[in-house]
Length: 370
Length: 150
Ligand code: SF4
Ligand code: SF4
Image (tube, rainbow over all chains, first blue to last red; front, side):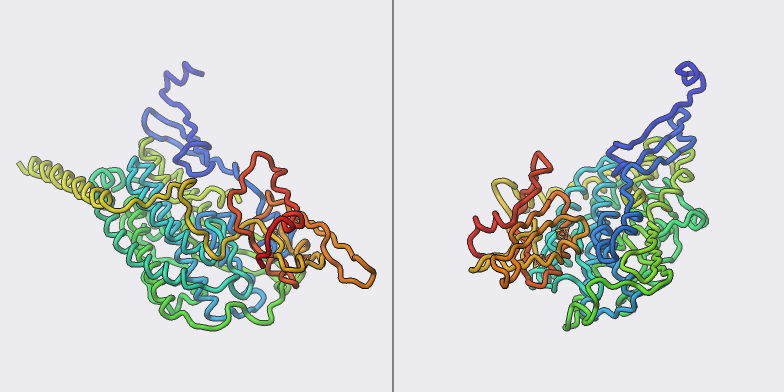
């Protein structure tokens, strides 16, 4: 075997499942020809916890804490998505204040998720300083969200028909101070990273994903938009209060690592705009819909709901027989499709670029494994 | 000639981008430290902080009537509660109230569902321990050691 390897100059490299750059437990089986990757085979399932099966063993309400454990970096978005899906199925109308609160928190969570990605991605590429700034900013968001949700990472804040707790003054002051601070920081990020010659050389023209490729593999989210396809569920199938808010969908041109990076930075700005507008318009009123049962159950039938998570389109498919316990719950998670395009992007690249491309897709492995 | 010029321009603009980045770093170096030195300095806990659940203490003890609603609602089967009547005509009152915090997801469903508002989150956060059995807490016993904080 060894001799054969030497003669053919082909060998296999296991990247992960405990490699720091795979962010979670993803294993990439790479077939190398010298420094070049010939083939890549992702191996998943190391953190499979059976969330979809768990859903069939508990009531609709009791599944609520599970949602935030799938994608722990954008836990509130998942929480929000699940509540919206069940509310739509049950025909519950949420009071406007509650919906605005949810959107504010969800967008803050989206920024926190992008910030973590930003820091970790640059760390993968060997830049240590931006990581510290990103975590400083993210810490602010976690403290702000902690004021109302009581947790730092795996929130369980949304409820069917509203939210668990009203906003307090500390939250409002925190957000108002945070928005200008992050705007200033984003400028620094552009000086520090977006124009940095080393970063440009490592990401420009690397891992180019064409719009056709992206569509073929059902890539969604910032990865798709970096290839220039204008698709955002918040615009395409509006839900919640997004139609009332004014924001843009940033697009890339080339679909390379740099564009994927840049689109996420622009998205943070847009999220800030959404938070700002939502805070301005925040209506007063109740935060829980009146007359909602403690454990609502959707009428018999199958339902699908699409949501824009920080990583792309999240689809929730629910089947109910009208009982307390779901018959089937299927989660279409964005990272799974985003991972499936990876072998195509990696073919023929250098090993060092593997990390740059893998990181730029922003995969969260527990979400894929569920 | 042109290639040389482009090369030089690349070197210069690259060097400038690095210098600009260093400028940002220098600016932050002169600003106050953001890190909190944890065991010696502590941040205030937010108002909504969720620690392991506790029974709220009232002057007459706790208000739990052992209806078991929290037990049935908890997604992870954390709570075990058993009530006792002092006399036949009395209200039921919880005599044993155990939680296994190692399985609690701090979702807050039990706190919300309680008809007596007998439960609340504690403000404990250093809950790490060497054994999973340390997560088992006797809330009634904990209540007796506590002063009254509803
Ligand atoms: S804590 Fe509340 S819900 Fe739980 S058993 Fe006691 S009274 Fe019932
Ligand atoms: S917070 Fe949630 S998981 Fe913990 S005991 Fe209450 S219902 Fe159970």
